Image (cartoon, rainbow over all chains, first blue to last red; front, side):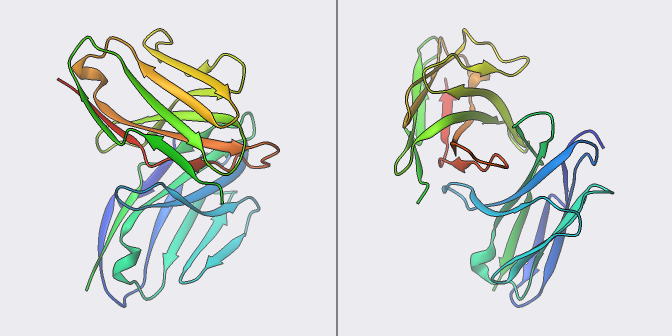
Length: 112
Length: 117
């Protein structure tokens, strides 16, 4: 994988349901992976910075896992609420530099 | 903490004019600021990295004479789109990082929607 890719591009979730989506990134020269939550007309908000293979991080009902060997991260939302509606971005940091390379985002819409 | 503001949030201009976008770190000193551009339904693309008091480093394919970046203080960076044309219409967003950031944590502004008529 040469680029950072996120799937699906969008998903609709019923309120109360749990969901998850994927970020794929180059596994070579991996340094860190960032997850951001971006609501319309607001600034992207940092959720997690993940660095170690097998890392699991949690913030409220949102959690994320990291597999650096195969180059993917999952973000999970448990018991989705309408306020979870946002675009979730992941960004990879390569060891060679300090740039964030972003995926295209997963737009989540939680229906009441 | 770590709030970044961006102004204006939306601007419409005529072709051939120049537009300046400001990015400010409100409660911290940002040694490095970044400018991104987002095309419709695409990911954020890094345009340039600027360090306070030095010239910006532009990514490949970004015209430095078209997109002038100034980082005159530790709390302010500006992006000027010179002689804007309709193809420059896009969403521009800035971010800032703290000195000593281990993993390049960046704090983002809310972005600026530029429309060139």
